[in-house]
Amino acid sequence: MSADNESVSSSKKRRIGFEEEVGITEFVGKHKGFNGVLKQRYSDFLVNEIDPSGCIVRLETLEPPPEPKPDTSWADDNVSAEAKEHLELLADGQRTEPVVIPVTGLSKEQRGQVHAWIRAHWPHLESHTTTDGTVRVSRSTAQRRRAAPWPSGRPSYTTFVLYKENMDTIEAVNRIATFLGMRPSRLGYAGTKDKRAKTCQRVSCHRLPAKKLLDLNRRQGLWVGNITFENAAIKLGDLQGNRFTIVLRDVDGTKADHEEAMQSLSENGFLNYYGTQRFGTTSVATHQIGRALLKGCYEEAVDLVLQPRDGGALAECREEWARSKDAAQALEKLPHRGCIEGLLLRALTKGGATNYLGALLALPRNVRLLYLHGYQSYVWNRLVSRRVQQFGLTVLPGDLLMTPGGSEEEPRIAGPEDVASASVQTLVLPLPGHSVRYPQNEVADWYKEILAEDGLTLNSFSEQKHRDLSMSGCYRHLVAVPREVQWQEVSYTDPQAALVLSDLDRLQGLPEPQSCESDDSARRALKLEFNLSSSCYATMAVRELLHRECTSWTPVATS
Image (cartoon, rainbow, N blue to C red; front, side, top):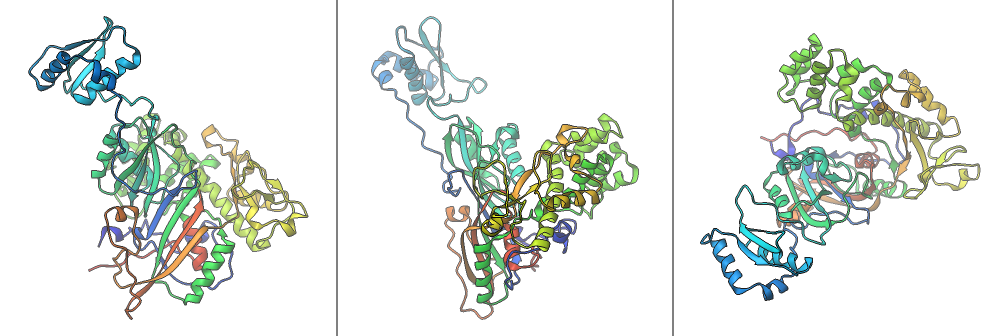
């Protein structure tokens, strides 16, 4: 079986019906829909970030940027011929004593030219200005050799395009940091991209030499390129969205069915559900752990994280915890301790066997947020489905409205005049939290009802024992509409053949895939391209297109 078509363990396969479990049940369009296979191969799912200026981020070169040539004209004309001869001898190893160049009376710029001139002609020599008005030049040793100084006038942040395959962003960043010998926090990026995909995104690092960075390209599954230098680091949220190129294989239905579905998606959009990826890929969903955290059931939260799954490298560790609740014994059966389970167990062994809150707080903050955001997303999904079931896609008095892509920080309350004039695309619903306002209609009561089912209230998002477990909430549009939509039907005979080219494929000169319409045995596929705003899920757009659940996929067997 190819690496691009790997099998998935039973604990990782998304079970049929999981969409309904996390509140995903409704659709926008009334079209018929059709069947198709999503992500049969990870090369069928391409993601390119869209930067804040609206440009699609692409990997177009693996070459280093041109290095500026320093201005050494003054040194070329004014350093004596004798000094130049001595420097040549020093560089060739025929001289051991340092070379002394008088610089008394020179300006700072002229002294800088002398140093730049020496580095340009003899990279292995080291120079420094002394207090007696001279520049002393000596041979560098491996121990003493220093990194070249950052060029004067160059912006301080090295920005590059990260291209990855079948790897999530956090893993890719950790690999880069390990290779470069730095903390992952030194690398800035705008957001995480899908794991089971080929993706491109921008990453930044303070004063990272391009040559050192490009050595990464020897690593399989990870490439960097398009290196530039910027004045500011990339931060979370520094993007407009993402450009998706998706192949749906083995589609059925007629061309008219496809056209009807594509027209509905392009014009009416899709319900902006949080996709099933938000809730994890194992039998214990993130929102279940988040619910336990918000309820203050910290032992339950730990048990859920460590709950046994089918198979996997952590099976013995999980089973030991379920059997004995002995953190030290469970830790002994853990093959690698840097994982979430290892962090929890190590915290329990050090901080007390029943200090469950302390163990959970020992997890990285982004991991805890993953659980808490999972529960907020679960509540939001359920609210969306209930609202569409009861009121359809209409604006009601008391709804919250915000212009998509607008600059408003807070929504306005819909009045009676908005019922006929406002678009459903301006309608937002809050994720529950302590800093959001709720609709001024019966929808607000639904939040309380859904939370009450889980033993929670609206105050549960603020009244927590630790501030890191409090959640402020935010607003999310009910409907998302993809932009710059393109699509085409293609035919293929080889299920292992790529039907779209990634940026790296094009850099490597691979030919464009050819359709096989003339072959009667050919299968049909649909190639989709569209832009989505950040935090929107392309899988939910595909679900709307197919008009059925699309979160499960079946690996193709190979002999």
